[in-house]
Each structure stands twice: as structure tokens, then as C-alpha cells.
Amino acid sequence: MNLILLGPPGAGKGTQAKRLEERRGLVQLSTGDMLRAERASGTALGKKVQAIMDSGQLVSDEIMVDLIAARIDRLPKGQGFILDGFPRTQRQAEALDAMLAKKGLRLDYIIEMKVDESALVNRLAGRFSCTNCGASYHDVHHRPKHEDVCDVCGSRDFVRRPDDRPETVKARLKTYRELTAPILPYYRAKGVLRTVDGMAPIDRVAAEIESVLERPGAASNG
Ligand code: AMP
Image 1 (cartoon, rainbow, N blue to C red):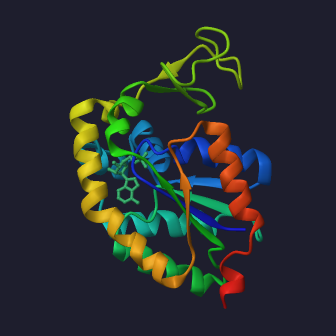
Image 2 (tube, rainbow, N blue to C red):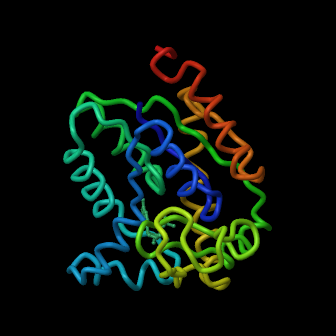
């Protein structure tokens, strides 16, 4: 099963993708994580995208399409995946369709996580994650069970994203509204878009996604 989680920054795509990895054995393909890894290893690509990411803009479609194509190529045959943070523009959405068709793959579900934009600055400003395993937390909504210890791996190292600062969050939301939200009608017109309430508590959102996955997906749309 292959799916896309779509929604603005802070909608909870990463959190739900991690849940789906555990429950369904799917692999999370987060283009944001891939770019952060490039930056952390100091590659040419990492250096090139640094300023763009920190200003809340989008990296070019060519770079992103190549990055995701290479990653999908490396998956073991039959391994299902969750796209998190890709596609983010109409051109990426169209390139993805072409790329998957060429590889004989298809998208079964495109799930929009709908959230109230006014809540997102606070959501993002409070979030942090485990440096070791990537588990995500929030100062108010989802603190580790034991103060300063990761629930998943026990690490005590946490990190906050520089682009979660309120000024940059506003730029990222603007980018989402202008470039990414317009791809929703593209998927709606294909009849494959499903919407869940991203404002609900994490477990409720997870349950809603499960109920979407239990219903027939794109394959049955013909
Ligand atoms: P994310 O972790 O998904 O919020 O991504 C962090 C940043 O990486 C974004 O603000 C963009 O600058 C860049 N980025 C991630 N995915 C994409 C994409 N599909 N297209 C363009 N830029 C991206």
C-alpha cells in the first residue's frame, strides 16, 4: 500500500507517518527529513538547500523529484510507503504520477490532514524531537512520559527545528497556501482524496486514518 499524507506544516503528518510505519509496516519517506540529513552530512545538496529551507521557501521541483525517485528506487520490491512532505507543488504531483506509472506503482490513498491554520504557529513553536530516533514531542500536547527522556528509545538528546520559529512558520504557511493547497483539487478530481480532522487528538487522528485505509482505495476507483 502506498499513500500520501497531505497537509500544512504542523498538521501532524510526521507523527501519523511514524504510527503507520509501526502499525502497517510501511516506510515513511519524508523529503524534509532527507534534506535535513543532507544538511547534517554537509553534502553539496545540503549546502544548496540550506538558505531556502531556513527561509520557509520550497526547494526546486527538479531537485525534489530526483531525490524522491532515487529513494523509491532503493525500496525493496513490494515495500509500501508513505509520502510525507511530497508532493508540494502541482509539477511535483504530476511528476510523481508519471514516475510511479513508469515503475509500475500506484498511490492507493491520498489523505488530507485538515487543520485550523491559526493553531499551527503554536503547534510548531512547541515541537521538538528525539535526536536519536526522531520521535516527535510537544511542550504542551505531547511531553515525554519521563521528563527529558525519549519514550521510544530512552535517549536524552532532543532537537528543535530552526524553521519552527514563528517568523519562518508564517512564511511556510504562506508557501503551503500558495503552492501546495492548490494540488488538493488535482487529487479530488481523480476521486482519490480522503480528508481527516487533523485537529483531533493524535490517537483519534490515527483511528480516522485507519478507517480510511479499511475502505477501498484508488485501485477500486478504476
Ligand atoms: P518539512 O520537514 O516537510 O516541513 O520540510 C522542511 C523544508 O524542506 C520545507 O520548508 C522546504 O524548504 C523543504 N522541502 C521539503 N519537502 C519539499 C518538497 N517536496 N518540495 C520543495 N521543498 C521541500
